[in-house]
Image 1 (cartoon, rainbow, N blue to C red):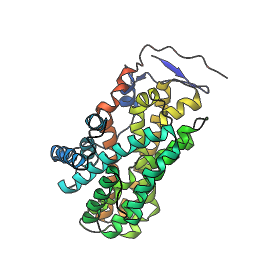
Image 2: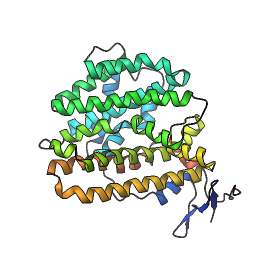
Image 3: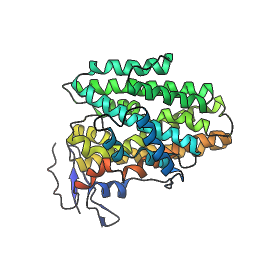
Image 4: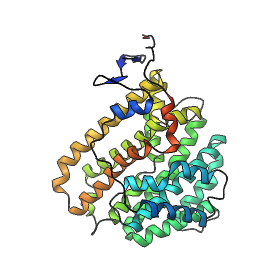
Length: 346
């Protein structure tokens, strides 16, 4: 049994139910509570081929590092895990959007690390496309414009408008992230979670789950305080779970905006303990999601229930995908068993 400590307390995290864990991935699996069963879309392989063709058509896979990144992130697999019940056409849009966001996010991270100001042309182009329908000026912009076209063709005007608005929030979040990375002080957990809620890019997918329903979700349900809270909880739980598995990779790259790394900085503790603390926060968010959903489900229409089920897909899907995707394989390189406790500080 191992004991890991923070500056405030000592806790035992190396065992659960008397069973030792060996590495950080095992620690996550044994402590993260996931009440929603895993599922996959039967059209995953077609979506994978479609993503490759779509990225190639817009010249993105020809750019340095993109093809290798897509092979390591498997966007169609994430789409399949998060959206197991949608039809093939909608699954393809979800997969294309995930792939686009991976490319866009990695580009923004690389540019923003040098200077947040250098991000402005690419971010302003995205906003102009999403808000004003302006013509793209880059391959990334052209891919976004085509994705916007796909959404408009599949969704109602109101759903497409919500998609564009949420997508602009994601774009703005990347500038927040670049500013946080450039500052001489490290962001606190509260600042990290605020930025992460934007850069997660999860909520832009929710209007697509509106479109997956046989009829419109009533506006009163979309704006119901409980449904709005479910939207926030599901996006946070999904992206915080990915943070658990990406913490090793991002720590080695010097990244700041990660829930587990924020805990490690604030508590001055080991990465293992920081991951454990982040798991507890995720478990709390999932528990709150379940309680709220149980309370409001009787008030929702079948379309509203289907919409919330789309949110659940991201909670379980991000976990299902993160556990096996090559992008986060470094999580298995950090041992847990056999560590000695750090001295308690007062």
